[in-house]
Image 1 (cartoon, rainbow, N blue to C red):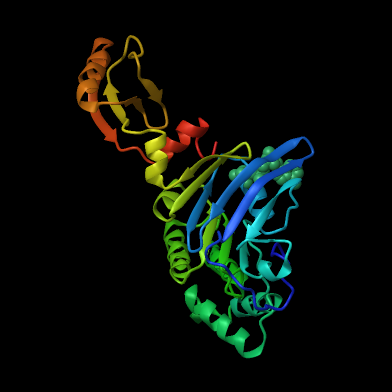
Image 2 (cartoon, protein in one colour):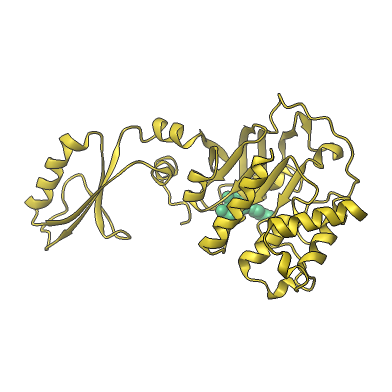
Length: 322
Ligand code: ATP
């Protein structure tokens, strides 16, 4: 099967203790040759939680997701699902995985793909038919069920890909960039699908390069850099422990400036000067005066509430995709 986890065993009864974390990653280390991908990564996911995993390019997110589903063997550390090692095949059946690269057969229809992956997850006869029919409805492709997936748009293929990972009703779903290369409307739809699963109790762990998705569609955010957790908490907690009460001020100017205004940075992407201030009311008049002193005329001014973008820059010194 392309890119899907090996879940060949028949589903069997697995006793879940809801007191223990749904997923626990303990001190994971992984090196590929001279590339240190994970350097002691640890965090836990509560049952029913939606967790977004963020990090700059090469931070170790994919290695982490692959270690969590047993597709990469870490050099050190453990992964537990509901308190039991992922090496236990019974407990692995509680896990659903949606890999970053599309892992569906383009020469099969949507329904055939779902049937095929359902069988791989141990579903048979009536149960298989029920789950395939549920999945087609869930992804909104009932009317396209018998069409080859090669004719589908990128967003539709992604939806089929996601459905293939949840046919066996996992308690935890891991998704590596489920909305990569997908238009905003399809992204919205995918998140609505995931919210529906989450409301039924499934814990969701996903990596994303869209900070807005992480901010609005998760309960908790874990930021990793150089294979280590550098922040872990709700968006409110992350802001409080990094940016605090500071505000970003962005100022557009016209006119030729004889020098750079003191304490302001030029942001060429936004075509504005930017700075952070602790007290807008007290500090703003001085900032505006410094711009005028070097010959600038202020044409626009924005004061931004801190958001995940500011937290990410503060912690990693990098944009999410550089
Ligand atoms: P991206 O956001 O770019 O997808 P990532 O956060 O998912 O990156 P990983 O793909 O886990 O990061 O890579 C972490 C580090 O390990 C990087 O330095 C990468 O080059 C390296 N790496 C990953 N897979 C391999 C491999 N198979 N062989 C050698 N190095 C690897």
